[in-house]
Length: 163
Image 1 (cartoon, helix red, strand yellow):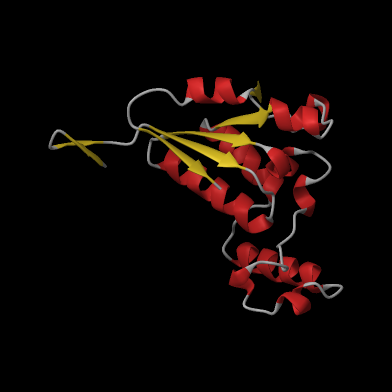
Image 2 (cartoon, helix red, strand yellow):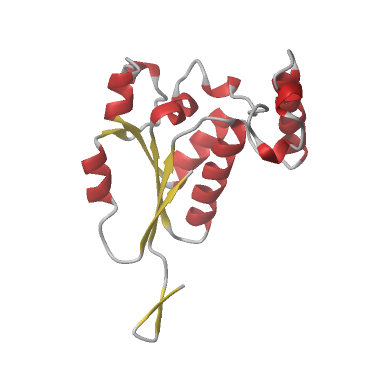
């Protein structure tokens, strides 16, 4: 709730910006968007820069945990860079998510789209990385410029979150 003039105002919309497609960032974004929908809050995700990998048909099921430069891994950077370390960490994380019945990325995207979450690709990032819309998921709501995204974020009680 937001306090405005001594009055509680509910959050109406969550606008999430996903800029990295590491598996931990993608799931954090998806869980927040899904949680918003479950609470009756509108949600939209804007996939930009490397976050676009989460909606590319050929890449979305092959996302990894970042083991180098990730302080939450609690391992020295040198060890994180060893061959196979990223694959091992990714396998372990996917195993734990499976135990909690968290769906794979592709299925989660379908759930989000079916719940009413709007999924947008960033035009600038698509142009920069030479990505065509045909390479993206079918449930995509479209391609937006940053300005278009800001227009969609207008209104009272809208929150923007960068992941």
